Length: 196
Length: 201
Image (cartoon, rainbow over all chains, first blue to last red):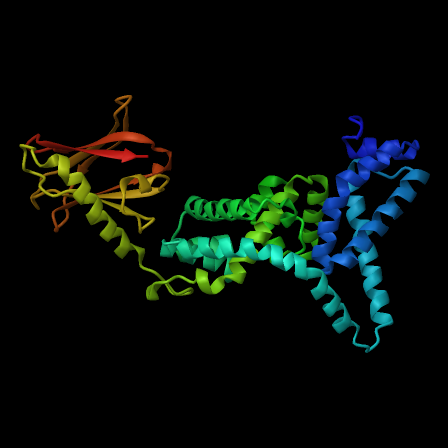
């Protein structure tokens, strides 16, 4: 990536001027995050990939042809484009919805695709279980339980357990750091890329 | 949306739990796109969330009194911890010649479950309960002195024992205290004094 394409405005201007490096810079800067955002919205990694591709394609075509208002806000422009595509697709899907058992077919296909991933995951999960079993402070367990399992918010947990926010942050940060190490220790960085 | 807003409003956790309102969700997505370095942080939080969810049975607190949703009286734990801590403090005091204050300093930490001095770091408030050895009208003054600099960190005068002969003294904002401190308790009537060494590690 060229050093000159560090800002959104520079990327937009570069694409407008026909520089292919600017297009590469755009994809490198935004595609990973955009895919994640769309996976979260759609809960479907294949659909998210398609939407991500369509969004970037639309955007490139537009930027090649014309300038956009406020090029510094390229992130906001990408987000709006992606969400509009997502909403349009949702509407279309609702209109043509049939009652075939396609969801079941998709489910089986997804199961096949996930088998390898599941095998690789097992090792990490064993380590995580071991870590959780070894937590010997009941109050720390309760903090983690209320926050992660019951999904109580931070203020609620602090108030309920009469905790300082600093103590709460310390417990959460310790658990987060430990689990991160366990996840990373399997030597497979793709774990952070894997769909959840 | 900015980093400060995200941290103070627990936005990452609420995003993962799908608890953000649509406006907030849109703003956070834009923030993510503009700051792709944050993505790894979000993914890790999501993984941690997922792992704890998947292992909820293992994570469930073991003690009966610690069932989620139950209210816990941490003062009970605090006092138990205080007694243990007091035992630690008593050891170097055995050869003191002034008997006016015969009982240990009891530290009550609002964190509640800690059993060791070094675990008291970062506490917002620590209460000192000091047995005055008398329920007379004597008043006491207390000073907390930083050993390395000799600076007086906190001082309180005219403290009177309660009917249980205890002097009650709260020290706030202790999170900033690090290192060795001496707590000096002075009987204002007869001038006798006791000192206690405290370590905030």
